[in-house]
Image (cartoon, rainbow, N blue to C red):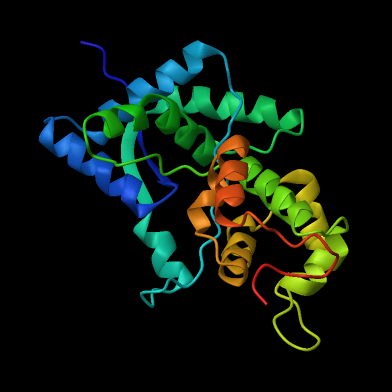
Length: 233
């Protein structure tokens, strides 16, 4: 009998909804998170495709009054895994980071979950839809909306929609401009603000581009196109 060394792995999942679905699936199928995640990680490694489309999560105070730290703890997950497998994951992550790929062990694990476990959870009814949101889609759709509203300049759009007070902004213009260019940063927070201001359900920003454009066209058939005007006046 081969005895393999194991270690305790701690990570943060994309959401507590995903964590609860994984735990429920494991319980009802009389298996463990360790087994489920081992299978997913092995498939990820065997695929030799290490492009990660899972975004980092920025925890904030929720509408229910939970603090950012409480929200972070709610999506934390610990499991036991074979040391050899985790060492393999860490080696891959280390090599990718040498090429300036923004990745870490947690994102690698979550990508494996997104590819190989989440479809099962959705198919068997443990999740109603994907919990992973694409920042790329959200930013593309935000830029489409900006243009549709008549803002050819990101700076003027920022000035009109992202000001929290007379002289203060929710995020600085350099941060917003970087977000539009790289699809990085606290995209979710910006989408929250814009969706409230314009009157669009937040989740629609994460649709693919064609679906979002059709949605905007049906919702606002007569968009204002002059610089500085808004849908909601």
